[in-house]
Length: 78
Image 1 (cartoon, rainbow, N blue to C red):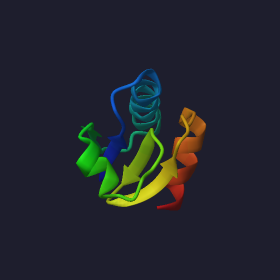
Image 2 (tube, rainbow, N blue to C red):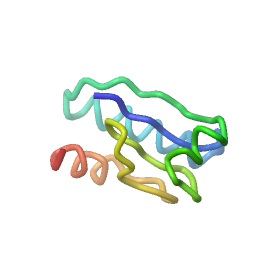
Image 3 (tube, helix red, strand yellow):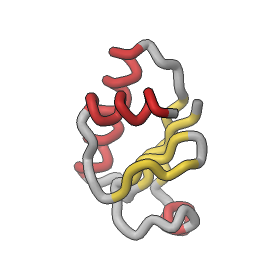
């Protein structure tokens, strides 16, 4: 599984990355986390607001910092 955090590297983007790491640790799910900071790459996903969360090339959240429980719920449905 590949999880991408889309954003400029702002505080919210960092928090989303930390929450994602925490979720993976708590659930035991193995995934690679990639930060995507380049604006052209972010725009390629059709994302107009960051931070955004992309799991296996599917945009699952845009413009908000998900809590670990919210991320876990999304991972359960995939």
